[in-house]
Amino acid sequence: MKLNADILFERLKNYYPVEMFGGGARKLALLFPELYMDNTERFLENHVYLATVEHLPRRPTIGKNVVVICIGDGSSLNYYKEHATVLLIRKKADFFEVFQTVQQIYETFSRWESDTLALFMGIPTVDEVLRQAVPVLGGPIFVLDGSFQLIASASVPGDREEPSFPSVRGALDPEAFLSYLREKDMNMDIHGAFTLELQGNTVLCVNLFSPEDEYIGCLYINQTGRSFSPGELVLAEKLAQMVEKACTVNPSLINHEKSSLREILRLTMNEKPLQRSQKLLLHSANNTRAYRCVSVHYIKPFSTLPTGYVCSVFEGIFAESVFFEYHNTLFGLIPESALSSEGRLAGDTLQRLEEMLRDMQLCMGVSNSFQDLYMLRTYYFQAESAIENGHLVGEGEYVFHFADYALTEMITNSLGGLPAEVYFPKGMRELLDHDKAGGISYLETLQVLLEESMSLTRAARRLYIHRSSLVERIARIEKELSIDLNDPDQRLQLQILFKAMSIEDHARNTIQ
Image (cartoon, rainbow, N blue to C red; front, side, top):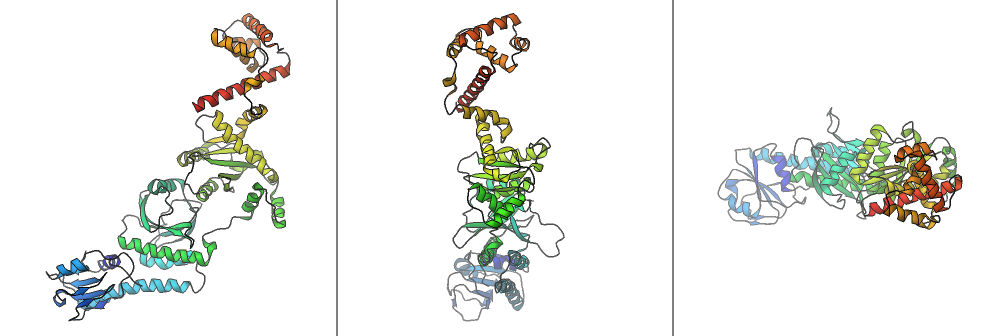
């Protein structure tokens, strides 16, 4: 395996007090080391030479990307420092011992390369590829797929401590993921190694790509307590290439197929036909437990959050749940048992969920409970309606239950898209104008009476007026509107109108 000057320097300083002068090429191009032969006046490109300072010629011809490992210092080295990369061992050292050490460094990397290539005589797993790299790169090393699900890891043999990796059911946990967002702004098209701070640790990362240059995951190397050197970045990229090759040979290693139930639900939501085996599976799972449908929307348009990762986080919060992308939103099916006894998100689960939704700029709608999976689309539309009406009349919330907005949905649908004013009874516009100009609000009086179920005593108490005054007002209202409040249908119409007007007022205020 070929190396570069940074790797040679980093490895050689483990044995000798060495200094580096000049910067070599970043690519892995340096051939196995050679002993400098006296009277050689030409240093060839991509070659590594070991010499003592007194044997070096004064002004030889030096090719590109040449590394000279020199024992001893002298003024003649100035020329080499300008035209090559010099790894200088100032103190006295055994010439052949240094040469043997450099050879061993090369052999370590060559053994890693050859052992990994031997894996490809068969169909290697990502875990096997990582284990071959640990003796050379250290660890722990992790590979995540495009959904930020942990699919493989390897640690230093004999390390009793668990690898430091924040996760939720094998996925990067929300706080760690948000650290990644803040650090790299989700630039998943970055090629090459980069470092980031992840919950106090410096992590070395390399994005993984398919042969078609599609993002399929990322490689993480976590070495707590120290920074990464330039040579390690190149080696991480070399390992990433090996992982990409393994995933090309066996795509199922990193591109997990969705479970049978998930695929059935996806087809059902898209109104696609099911195969006979899928119908049997859906029939066997139907009416066996209670569920809630969930819809998740992005508050911030054109969000760069990877949907696969978001789905995996929700599946980590709700046990036995299923989430997938559906029409630019996220569809979720969660068991009723994931909620509180009152059938709602509550307690620590609700707090944790709301924090995550706020940080990721998401909101969630939750349907009523149901058991018939063939009604999936109907209850998904409930979840969608909860979000729509929640934004319409809710205040700064991130989780909307359909049960809280069912009446709002019924009323907005009952109006047929027309403004509430279209349904005003005769004289209602005049009462509105009177209320704006006068000191007595007849419509407020009527609304309070309806809210108090026609109880004159309770309504008078709320309005801070005498009961007889209330009776007089009601008589005038009935005359102006030509209605009879003893008629339940007329009362219902008025109640719907008041609710519709309240919704319209809230919508106007929200827009303003």
